[in-house]
Length: 237
Ligand code: ADP
Ligand code: MG
Image 1 (spheres, rainbow, N blue to C red):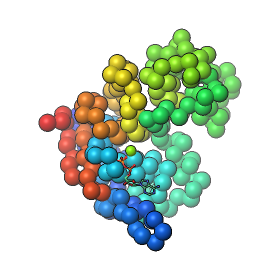
Image 2 (image 1 turned 90 degrees about the vertical axis):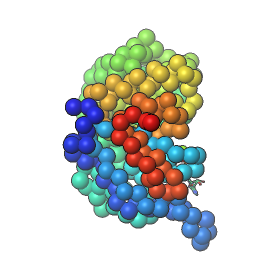
Image 3 (image 1 turned 120 degrees about the horizontal axis):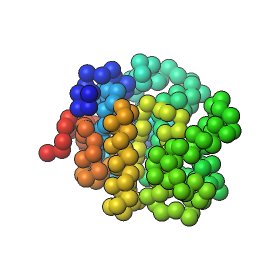
Image 4 (image 1 turned 45 degrees about the horizontal axis):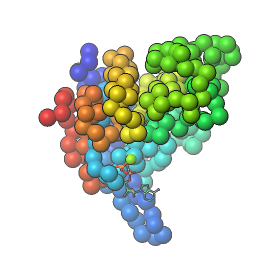
């Protein structure tokens, strides 16, 4: 049941995660010590001031980057033990990404952007097209499938990006400031999609610095100085 996801299995388990960048030989610590369990079906916001390390943490969670130290278990598998190709495979299978700047391919239509992640699968061309069309309908873009990204508003582009993130049916959705470039109406439309995905049982991790946007989540993790300073279940105070 929603709101009681703490009883669900842990899908993401971080212990003593640290991440430093090196400028020459000088170590610049960004994440100092992160312990975090995320349960299946949770909707977690990650908040904190600019430069707090939110994107750095998200890139580690999304297997786009490796930590400097500590343990990250994704679905019970230690990520540090995976080769780069195993990591890429895991990422493609389990995680859907949504970025602030949409990251659509500008020369591909809406439909082809959503079809693209299915090229690794084993569906026939007409099945891929049908599935992508249905996914676009589910985010309210059934009448925009032949448009190019440049012909759409920011909110529409972000909904295409969400459809693309969902097309391989990942269990986990990760979004880094997905409403950062959107007006308030588009923000609401995008967040209502995330709410629906939460109700459908997806695990969602959302980085934002907007309190209204974080309000859609069921749990709120606050980052400061490279560690978690607050972890609030339920509504924000
Ligand atoms: P946030 O997303 O919370 O704004 P980031 O994770 O992007 O923060 O960045 C945290 C800190 O790490 C910042 O001080 C940033 O300058 C630094 N940083 C991020 N990426 C790199 C990098 N590739 N090399 C060096 N420093 C970086
Ligand atoms: Mg960031």
